[in-house]
Length: 302
Image 1 (cartoon, helix red, strand yellow):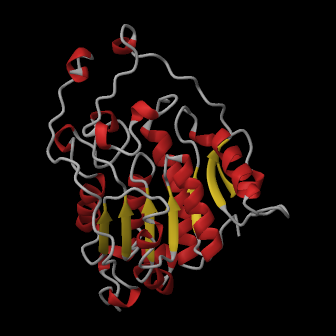
Image 2 (cartoon, rainbow, N blue to C red):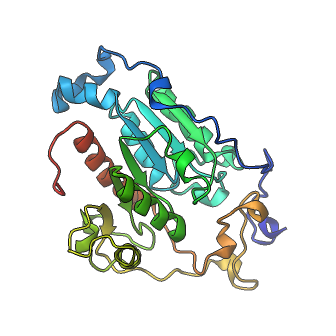
Image 3 (spheres, rainbow, N blue to C red):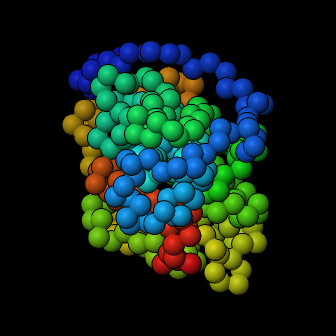
């Protein structure tokens, strides 16, 4: 087994991949439980910052987060601790041992379990009145409409797959759904170089360059401003070091259920290194924009 050859603990298959979840019975907005009309005292310090009306708006807001890895998991926690009352959490993947260094739901004991389900449990523990909907599914053209139901007030794009990422951003722009996108949080070490700006004004980041080119090709941003805030870094990408266990046999994926995964790491051209202080910093920057927009406080990006 690759896990043993790499001198890493063997992962336990807690559940096998089955067919994609049934997405035909998604709730409508009006089907969601009523929003509390009173603010719980746990939000005391937040009310003192955001104001009573601002927190009430957050309690009634619905955010859908696509991708619950090193960035998306921290976004979910930040929004849960910021009184966002309705969340849809979307990720097709299960926890892998290599996620432990940067994903909130990843522990040695949760390997093989659904990232979405684990994170939903964490969000409910923080915000018991919240409506949280974990969905273990891959975002593509066949699932797009269902995964954007109920229609969210804001979308956070923390997807790794470039094809899915472009489709999600194009869909949100076309349908007028507010969205913020996270570009490359990996291969970097300096959180002071993280920026939030319109995609049209990003610099250095290779993923942002690809997104800009593809969206312009689809007719967005031809006049300059794209109306798409992104979190990106102006730090140059660091080439990955080769771990000792890869020296003889090359890269060895140890992810559970990798043979059935639509985005297995074995299919990637390169695996960059990551650090939690970077993924979390990207997430906090994105969460700040979401919270300020939903509470109707001004943001630096408009």
